[in-house]
Image 1 (cartoon, rainbow, N blue to C red):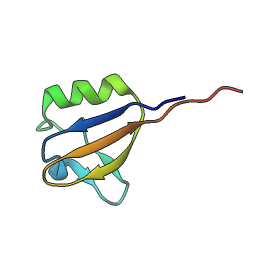
Image 2 (image 1 turned 180 degrees about the vertical axis):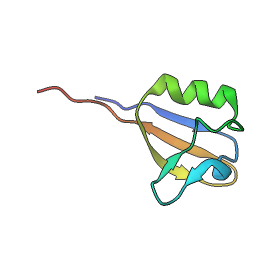
Image 3 (image 1 turned 90 degrees about the horizontal axis):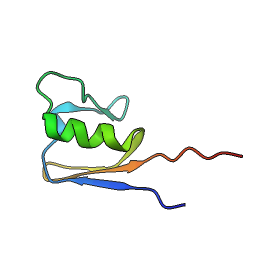
Image 4 (image 1 turned 45 degrees about the vertical axis):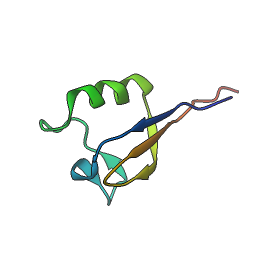
Length: 64
């Protein structure tokens, strides 16, 4: 099964929580369009984050 990758060409480091390795997308200053894109993929993991780009990988739920 392929997982979806979302590439965001924006600096999201101000909302990155390094201790928990997640983005604080519910912060009032977080860009709304990006929040909507992230919400559309559901649960995700951060593959890469820099000042120029963020790559998120959708976490697929597997069923047995």
